[in-house]
Length: 124
Image 1 (tube, rainbow, N blue to C red):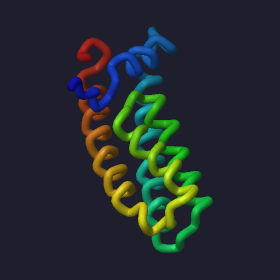
Image 2 (image 1 turned 135 degrees about the vertical axis):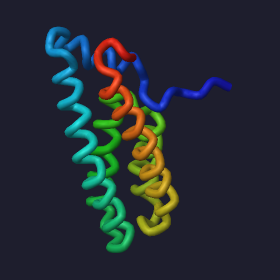
Image 3 (image 1 turned 120 degrees about the horizontal axis):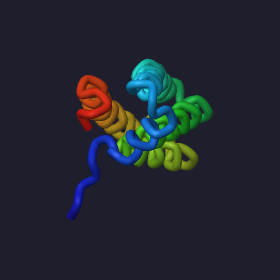
């Protein structure tokens, strides 16, 4: 069984192709936004676990799903999609294991994105 990469290189290349002459400035900006915003969205997931706020949970999961998809973080996208889908019928506090999975996948994605940026345009 083939495992998906932490970050899909085709997604990174697509972002690079959007601004080919900027020495990865656009890619760094997109990654920076993702690395700043995602922990805030994860905090919203955690808060909503305690308050059982379904709407907040769904919005946060949806936000992470979209941004992780844009950057090619497939496992993170898959976990947040499951969380978003499951939140419509499952009591929110019972989704704690999915939030833990989202946190773990974000940590893996963050490390890989930081490696990609450190490697520069020719390093991937």
